[in-house]
Length: 376
Image 1 (cartoon, helix red, strand yellow):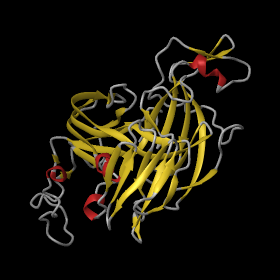
Image 2 (cartoon, helix red, strand yellow):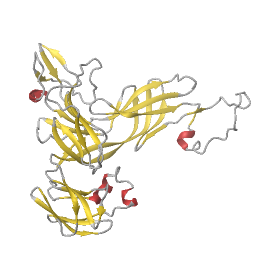
Image 3 (cartoon, helix red, strand yellow):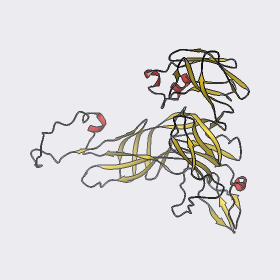
């Protein structure tokens, strides 16, 4: 996952990035959102002032290595000055996948934070036609979407069939790791799409030579559906110049809960009180699979923790709500340590103060010259 802080006006970002021999100015040009850095652009593995190979550890004990960096896209040189278009300057952080409720260490422009959990929305785009390299945006700000990256109407060994590849395009102009390959054509048998191939074909066992009678070579098993997790593509037709898309479905990250402070972590029984910032979290009840806590005027039962409640927790932000409590002003957030939630009549709790909800597209609090763009 990348948390990108996007410069709204590059002129104001000059204090964060100075280029020798010139100035950084805002350009009256289209913004650089979803545009990748140039293939021949300079790349520096390390840069003074940025975090390089900083060690970290999660609540579950996993080791992390943190790096942050600066990305400049679509820049140009005019009159001895470097011109950066809107959204052309990023400060980024990348590590491994961030798991909810795992106290993931992250960095933003060198400053340490802890990732707590995130929010997202489901995007469904239907009935669009895309040409090669065209983009069907999946969010209202048009900062990410589906890109048709290739069309092949002469796939070897597949006469009468065409292949198209879609990728999910990030704000930063990079792609997510998976690609979505679909096939369509008059000779394609969509056995993979309708499920009839799932139980296996009716072909005889063994080896046989194709003949006109057995027609062993007269089929193409492709699919007009491509799926990865909760994201999928369905197409109706593929031609040399365009693809008619029936449906594109994926998730968009809309925000993350983070804190600049390490949490208070411990095992607490009934009657325990935990100081968190200006507030106090009180444990009023502990059972074998739940804990009831009070935070200000908010009282909530955390749990139950069982196979059924945990089934979708990692994926479903709504399911996570039963394991956490937020103060009325959202500045305090506590959750059960789901690695080992209960032991010896006590609840293992993780309590954060100074919590911030970073919403996609909002100004970044510590430096409002930047916008926040969580990506996942």
